[in-house]
Amino acid sequence: MNANNDDIFSIADIIDSQLESSDRQNVGRVADIEAEWREDGTLVLCHLVTGPQALSGRIARPLRSLAQRLLHDRFEYSIPLSDVEKFGPTLRLRRKARDYPVGRSERWIAEHILRWIPGSGY
Image 1 (cartoon, helix red, strand yellow):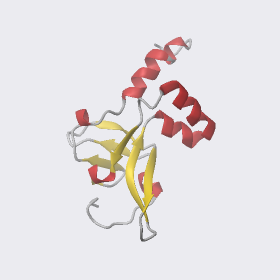
Image 2 (cartoon, one colour; image 1 turned 180 degrees about the vertical axis):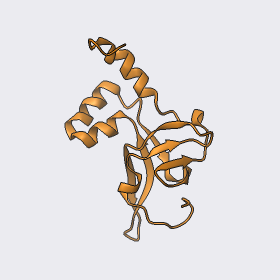
Image 3 (cartoon, rainbow, N blue to C red; image 1 turned 30 degrees about the vertical axis):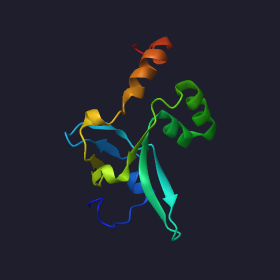
Image 4 (cartoon, helix red, strand yellow; image 1 turned 120 degrees about the vertical axis):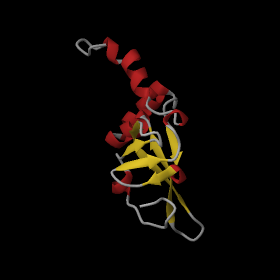
């Protein structure tokens, strides 16, 4: 499938999909999506959202607020749907991994939170 076609995708087809850059690097997973209503009344997916805040909001709404206070939106990133070159279990992106500032939250969480938990290995 190609993102340039008018294919129909459901949220279930996209949420939690692995994101792979054009240089074949895994750059994260889709935590949420952004959509917009068009003037003709159709709802169109426009961005893939990655980051711990979006993911925590799927677990429980109050967790998203807590994550926002802790992380201050620094790890949230929206990828335009037009950047998706190929759909499937893995979404292949058009640009290289270095062009997507994702995956940095895991390092921050390990360095600032997990290291204080006994037995975490950090």
